[in-house]
Amino acid sequence: MANLPQTTNFIRDIIIEDIKNNKYNGKVITRFPPEPNGYLHIGHAKSICLNFGLAKEFNGKCNLRFDDTNPSKEEQKYVDAIIEDVKWLGFDWEDRLYYASDYFEQFYNWAVELIKAGKAYVCDLSSEEIKEYRGTLTEPGKESPYRNRSIEENLDLFERMRKGEFKEGSRVLRAKIDMSSGNLNMRDPVMYRIKHEPHYRTGNKWCIYPMYDWAHGLSDSIEGVTHSICTMEYEDHRPLYDWFLDQLNIYHPQQIEFARLNLSHTVLSKRKLLKLVNEKYVDGWDDPRMPTLAGMRRRGYTPEAIRDFIERIGVGKKESLVDIALLEYCVRKDLNEKAPRVMAVLNPLKVVITNYPDDKVEYLQAINNPEKPEMGVREVPFSKIIYIERDDFMENPPKEFYRLTLNREVRLRYAYYIKCIDVIKDGAGNIVEIHCTYDPETRGGWSPDGRKVKSTLHWVSASHCIEAEVRLYDYLFTKERPDETEEDEDFTNYINPKSLEILKSCKLEPSLANAKPGSIYQFERLGYFCVDTKDSKDGSLVFNKTVGLKDEWSKILKKSNFNISS
Ligand code: ATP
Ligand code: MG
Image (cartoon, rainbow, N blue to C red; front, side, top):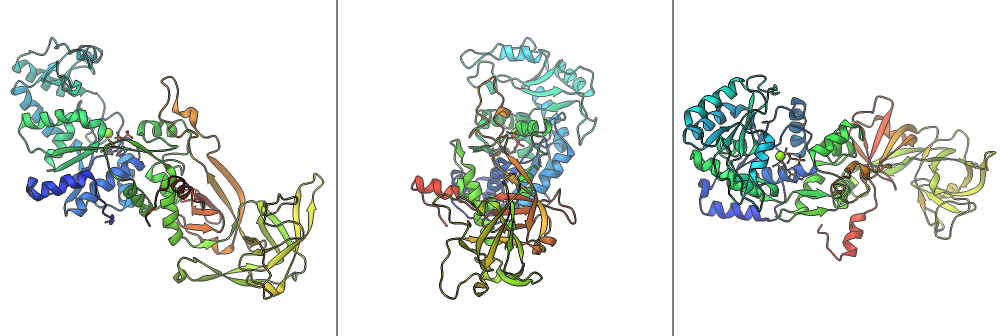
């Protein structure tokens, strides 16, 4: 299981205190409770790292529990994807894979118990009427005319609800608490609703389904959870969580709330992500532009980088917006040590080295990772015709352009100094190739006479290189907070029309011919790139740009005088 560095946070402090006081006999049991109605996103990673991380640190256990109480939205394919993602992130629930739907019978029996105690009743109001009767923050609610049904009648109706005798929406089971409570959640909340819909696990066994507030605390109690960690929006639900457990007088975990993660330039809501998928703004849940774990994996983000990011943002109670540049910084930092360097030319410009022998090929030594000498060296073929990046040549350069131009000498990485002597254009004036000479004395990229050049270019040999498709990504949204829109505005208005750019015939050094799907490289001077796991086929590689080399985050920190630790 993944090791997380331990910085403190308020939940950790609560647990330390509980252990000291021998609350829960010093045990720590947490759970990660996703609803299988979508893929996990980076916000879920915060909850996963927190729950599994705390359990590990305090020698406890963390369960993976599917909170699958709504048949309309849940599917087995999401269960499978969630399992894969939590494993990939580096966490292990051992044999503790649970489903709320396995507890339906127990939930039902507890509901009957509450009815018998006069604490729950069947209500025939429609959902609109229930809303109307609920009142507002400033006005108390009104009691339902069905509130004082006899226990016998409630038991009979509830049983018949289960048997499927009633139409959807015609009746619900409600807790009998307090219609004048200052907390709207306590105004006789619904516990069960009728849904004549098959459930992906229980099939047609049930046609009444428990509400989240009813099911969640009971599930935690069944599993002996000690600290039930959830996001702030459930703070107002805690009195209800407590009420159900207290009325049933069963084992009572402690609910603790923390602030959810918000990330700039993206949305972290499954409903919105589902819309992006369904309406084909992206190519599925694992599109590399998505903030999903599956998307990030496909993009080349590593579990180590994501865990590092989560550790750095910390855990608090106040909502904030985290700059996506911090996540990119963590990815870059991790890949810098892991990714082998290679040369790839994305927008090729043909270069003929006029004084190089026609048929000669030299194999020049290149370093795989200057940060990690143990990653060794490789040989890169050099020949008369090469490709360089189109951007690295300018015929009429501005003053601060130090790369190649007519009559200027530059270094080809690991190869030679070359000097441009001619520019060849087509009829329309477009540059089709350039001619250069090379200095045979500068093999390896160094001049024995100490002559200096101002830049070093990457290149590939035209007759040896392989071709590949490269996909470049930009933020999915142009707005920093696309989820903060006016009421009549749709968040999709802010989708970045330039979030994907496809380059079809990039030229890569031949060592990449056998690159495995999922492997990640640094293309020198360009950034980190990952072999796409979905669209790469034998003989035709597709690369996703993972992240650039430029460190936007360090710039942000420098501006704010903030220190990045290690
Ligand atoms: P969404 O709001 O995206 O629909 P959800 O909260 O309904 O997500 P669940 O599957 O119920 O999704 O979430 C499982 C767990 O992950 C919950 O405990 C939830 O609090 C937590 N979680 C969801 N989103 C975030 C987030 N952005 N930051 C931190 N934790 C989150
Ligand atoms: Mg939820």
